[in-house]
Length: 363
Image (cartoon, rainbow, N blue to C red):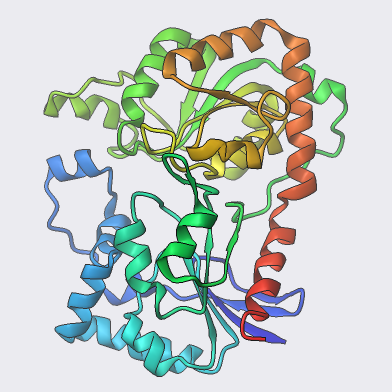
C-alpha cells in the first residue's frame, strides 16, 4: 500500500490502495493574536487564519527558516521524520515546508504542489516553491485575462501538472432524483460562503433586490454580525445576521432551493471552479455563476446547458429573475448540471485519479 501525506484532508487507512495521512503545522504555533479590530474586518481572518497567515506565503516561510524559528524548526523536524519514507507528499492547500528542506531532506517522496488560490497567490505561494516539487495540480482551469492555467504553468517551470476539480469531500446524493426532485422546491435563491474581499458589497445588493427570497449563510465573524461591524470602517452595512449551517442542514437547504448563486474572489474574469461551483449542481440547483478567463468556466459546466453564466452583476440578477419564472428552462439546466457532476466530478473518483497520476510522474 502506498503511503501519502495529503495535507488538509482526513486520514484514511485504505483509499483504493493508498494510506492517507495528514499533518497540522498550526499546532506548533501560538494561538495568540496581535491583530486589531480593523485588521479583522478588512482581512476577514478568524483566529485560526491568523496563525495560518504567519507562514502561508513563501516570504514568511523563508524568514522562519532562515531565522531558525524554534517552533518552525521543530515542526519541520517532525515532518521530515514522519514522511521521509512516504511515497507521495501532496500539499493540498498551501506549502509550509521550505523548498530547500524539500529538496535536501525529502528526496524519496514524489512531491506535488497545489495551486489553489490563483491568480491571487501565484507569485506568493506557488511559483517560489515550484522548483522543489516534482509536479503540481491546479483547481482553476482559468488563470488571468485570456490565458488558461495549463499554458501558464508550463511557462513557470515545465513541470507535469493536472487540473483537479475542487471537490474535497463527498456530497450526499438523494435516494431518488426524479423530476419532482428538481421541480418541487420552495426556496428561490441561496448563497453559502465566507465574507472575503468585495463579496459582501455584492451580497448587500443581492439581498436588497431579492429580500426574503435570498438566503445567505456562512462563517461570518463576530457571531454572524460582521455585516453590521463593517459600518465602523465606513463600509456599506449588511444589516442581517449570517449564520453557519451544519452539513446536514446545508444539504437539506440545497435540496429545497431552485437557484444557487456563485461568484469568485476576483472582480475580473480570472479564476473559476470554487467549491460552490460543484456543490450547487450536485444538489440539483441551477447555478448562476460569473465567467472565467478564456471562458474556462465552460470546461467545467457547459454554458446554457449545464449552468448559466453572467458578465456583470446586474446581469446575474436578471438571469436569476428569468429562471425563477421559467421553470421548464431551470429544471432542464439544473438536471443536466446534476448529471454532469455525478458523472465527472464525484470526489472519490477524482482523488484517486490525482493520486494515480502523481504516482507515475517519475516513471
